[in-house]
Structures are given as structure tokens and as C-alpha cells.
Image 1 (cartoon, rainbow, N blue to C red):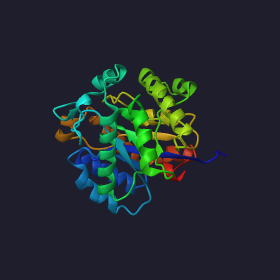
Image 2 (spheres, one colour):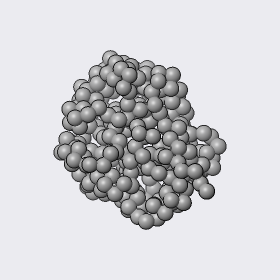
Image 3 (cartoon, rainbow, N blue to C red):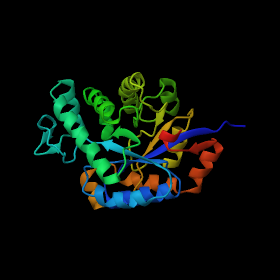
Length: 282
């Protein structure tokens, strides 16, 4: 008899487009995901948040801290051009060269948190980052500083993308990308634990977002050797012209949404004795 494992499945990018948001809300109502991560910088977030707040089911509501590609709230000069954030590659190079302003990062994080709280009328249950920017040096240090000042002893939990090497190799999905993110995830995980933040133990969901993806087979690999407190990241939705203009992850969102709504998804969870629960309640 398999021992029940409590894990969380998080739908990223709530707010990015209306169709993605509708898909995520549907999945929450169907209890196919246990939380969602909100991008507050999008034009669509404020409208979609009204529907998100109406959901009677207990689920996790987090903030997707954003420092790439979208318009900023505070126009930090060191990492924007005409008010718009740089690409992840350009941001990473600036961080390596230590050419970003901690003061500007601090103000932007606080502004995004302010906007989330004003719109959602609650503090975030968890913190993560678009393109996992919350784990990068300098940004991660400032995030912890901000959270400790804002939330005292009532911290939101923090996502990390660290996974044990043997599990990464066993799953054998996008190895370079997964190992790179695991390296930075491990750094943040250690910092979070040292500062008394709750964080996940195990992470999966990384892949190359190829149009030829067999998502059912991929998802089975995501579940290999998982334990309780595991966090599985998904990007479900429905693509359209609006999404294609602002993000590179498009067609696979449809694949993910359809799979998560399927009986095959439920069968896999039952087979593995997996129970979904918002991470802040595990």
C-alpha cells in the first residue's frame, strides 16, 4: 500500500491573458491545481483578479515577482529600457556584472507586493518569480529583506527550484536547464531555511515547451521519486494572438490544460497516492 503524499501543483502566470486566466480558474474549481501564481504587471490582472477572488475553494494565491519583459511599476533605471524590463538574458548578465541597483529592486518588489495586496485584498500565500528571477543573486537577497520587514513572523512561503541530482537524472528532462535552475534554487532554499521561511522540498515541471511534447508521458516523469512537500509547476491555458505577442510559452499551455482536465491525470494521482493541497497548508 502506497503512503499518501501531499504535494502542490501550481499554475503559473495568472493574469497574463484573459484566456489563460479562464483556464486556470477552471482548473482550480475542478481541483486539478492547488494554487496559482499571479503576475501583477499585466494589463489583464486587475480584471481577472475579480473572478479569482470569488472562488470559494481554499487554494494558494501567490505573487509571480516579475523583472523581465513587462512594463515595471517603478521604472528602475538599472534594469529597464523606457520603463520596460529587459530580457532574462540581459538581466542575468547585469547581475553577474553587479550592475543593478538594490535600492531600485527593493522599491519594485514592494510596489508589486502592494499592488497584489490592494487587488487581491490579502497578503500572498507564497512568493515565486517569472523566469525564476526571485532566485537570482542580489534579487533573492532583497526579496528576503523585504519579506522580513513586511510580514514579521507571518511569512509567505518561498518557492525554490532545487531538486536532488539523482532525481533530475532519473526523470531525464531538459537536463541543462533543470540543473541550472536547481543550482540557484539550492542557494535560495538554504537562505530561506536559515531565515525561517517555509519552502518546498523537491521541484519538477521544467521542460522545453516544445509543440511536439507528449505531456502525458512528460507528466509521468515529473512524478518520479517525489515525496510530500513537493512542488510541481505547470503553465496551463489557451493560446491566442494576445499571448503570442507577450510570451514564448503558447501552444503547450493548451496541452497542459487538456491533460490536467483529463481522467488520465486523476488516474496518475490515484496510482501514486498523491493528494493535492495548497503548499501553505501542507
